[in-house]
Length: 382
Ligand code: OSB
Ligand code: MG
Image (cartoon, rainbow, N blue to C red; front, side):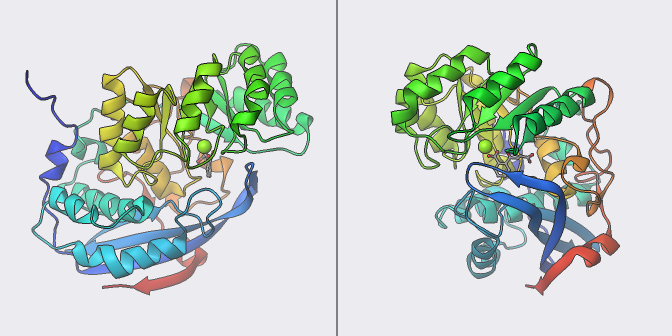
């Protein structure tokens, strides 16, 4: 039997160019409205950006961590520390991305920090070759499905209004956040108003196994999935819960690597996987997970971290990879920002589809004036 081709074999052979300058630039962008989960409410996006300069070519990548550890253990502070003090010195010109991947494995965890560098290098190499990122990834261009994540609202009416607006725009699916005490009745209200809508919920780990009977009530609403109902760090208890639910469980927070995804699938802890490229350590591990899932009939979609236009574009390119079968958390830029740091913004086209930004690299242009306007910290590392 021949070994199935790894989806990242070609990428692992790419050579790292000489890097002339490395900067970390933190920008702060106000959200158009607060974004609430069961854990925390964010009112702005504080994004740490990596700027790589090589032979006059400039590549930007985005670290998807928040300033706080309320979604994930990594923060902008830990990512800065790991990038500055451990990862950057491992990057040497002339070595392959596969070798770098091997070196990065000596640093335990901290996938968001690793992804920032790996993605930055991939974008840089794509720019230097003059090809779109997806072409470097070996993927054909295609339109991407859209999806919106609606945060917790103060009243059911406000939730219904937000869903109404999303449906009117043509989003392919709607995700609503839930938490204990703000779940069954709220989902029932949305489902009653939008019977045919592709609808899912995300609990961000708010429940425990003691809530099994309560969560089973969600089976009545024909949801495409329930995302991360139990603890952010659990896989095993999700396997017990999945046996009690008709609705598919999707894991988000619990999946940090291909090994985690394999364990979750083997245990029957989920039937769907949310891949956030940053949480799993970058584009290459994302492609490995997506292929692994595709080979086993497990659906995969791209999550989002309410990224600026840089991270948003990376997620769009990633979704051309094999295995991304479901609409992700890829919404219009205007869902989060009045003015982003990159152009053009993401907009839904006809039928709710999203076009891949054209041109070399991620296809969006980082606007220097907007970076300067939004920067709260600028640090030259090399
Ligand atoms: O749980 O998927 C999540 C945003 C921040 C942290 C965690 C999550 C989210 C989202 C929004 O749901 C996704 C997006 O629109 O980018
Ligand atoms: Mg989630």
